[in-house]
Image 1 (cartoon, one colour):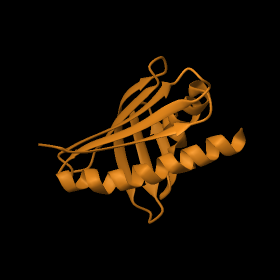
Image 2 (image 1 turned 90 degrees about the horizontal axis):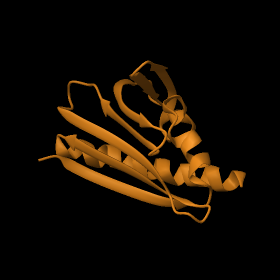
Image 3 (image 1 turned 135 degrees about the vertical axis):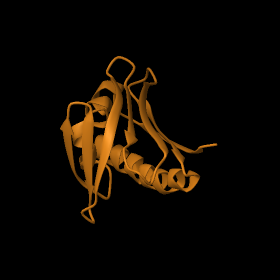
Image 4 (image 1 turned 90 degrees about the vertical axis):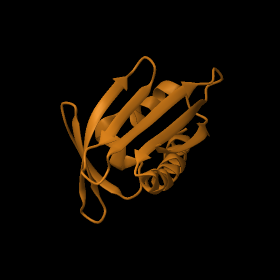
Length: 131
């Protein structure tokens, strides 16, 4: 059984504008605290943390129409991981951004999920500040 964590935030900006940032695999470091850099090569992404740790990931889905991005960590200490970012148009010029994490070992979902909450808060701050 996997550990799962899901956070969501409403952002008062159009879904397409939020997706342009949140759905770009190479721009994660712009809104995810603790990540200093991202490099994308095809379906591979490497994120580098503030501490200098490089984490390889496999990009599973980038769906501009559904506004869904999925990836998984590709490290031996995690037997299963899937992160999902969905940007949902609410039809009133705002959107709901949902960041879900599932992982085995289960404790990894809590660790990663704590970071994703901070990331969503920062994404909201940046997007609404630009408005």
